[in-house]
Length: 548
Image 1 (cartoon, rainbow, N blue to C red):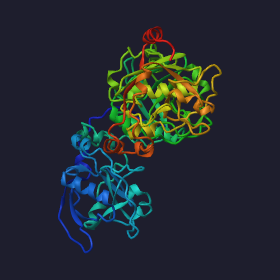
Image 2: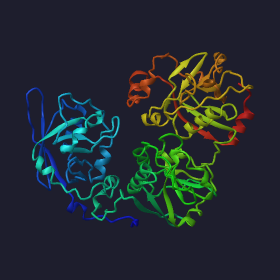
Image 3: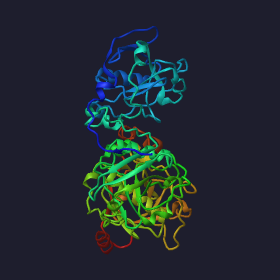
Image 4: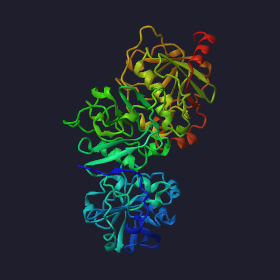
């Protein structure tokens, strides 16, 4: 099977062929028992009128009416038309409007008295609280939708439904939603006609060492191939670093230096079984997973030594480099594992430089935490708790603890922290780590640090620093210490302790955590930032302070 290379397009006549929403406007309306807004949408195929019912979906109706009043849908494409199923719209070709409305809304339960039938309207969600701006109008085959709270209907077409079935459907899933949302969205055209749902699709990657071309095989890894192609289509890999190059083994990429793109693609994909007829060899491409259903955006190209990979379903190959493989071996490999993946993903990712050279895999690593009452420095010991030390350092590297509360302070016993006020970060680090046995030569004393576990393999992100009365802890493998405060311990005893156990950990993990803290616990001490410090500072601290 042959396929044309997928290269950038210059896209102008798409809008002249595809159906367009010219304008949506409120027409007002009042019905018995509830206020119903009537919205008229003028399209290139004729108008349709919808009745919006706030009682069906309060959050959905409010969002839709807000978008209409803002002119969000005006001159926007009906970009996904599936005859007999639905038509989808709701991406503005005005980049600034997409940015303005990028905050999702909360789900609504499905109203018990509303049937999913042709003309019904709902948001195109994909998971809990995922509804944003994209809306669909159902055709006859939409009856199976609406079972999830992110598909709750909010309106029904009451006039002009026949026009909705006349929208052009010839492009299938080809128009790129990511590119429509981008600054160049208005330039999208019909030349975007490569079928990314074909069995084999060819992708060219231009790099600073020269181009390489890969053939993507859907039959090898259906979920993996689809994710990679959608990432390409979205421009996710453009201007991104080849951040992990291990000569003779592999090269890894797939973290965007655009913070918003990393956030947009944070959902993992399902595993695929390894195809029986595909050999792991140089030029093979797969996602860099780490466990069941963990594949996300990071991809590797294998060198000669990659043959031992691919045994796990999260390493299933999806593509093969067919041209330019020699260029992949020219990528700079001098930084090893030093580039911080966490820092590349954050808002300052573009500022990452070669000075990010602290080896977090060293035996001892120093971490400084600046707090609202002063800093403290901890020495992390990998030999004490290999899993615990690794998790703590990766959390520091990711900025997880930055601007987080010291929410549990028990004078004479311990202080606890490790819940981010950034909901997304808590979701990201939801997987627990394995226990470590207690090291025989480490005493539980003030300044000792360990994770706050609750049972076998329960350690996650919450950490405590022990005060003088912590000596009875550490007997369970989920309380194994991983670090010792070596400077600034006196500051840890000054954290505000007046709230006792009143702070709800569940509320801290929620979407409105910042407001919860500001409204209820304004005096909580906070960690401003935790960060790795160079080895020479660790040496200097050791020499200037005695044992705590």
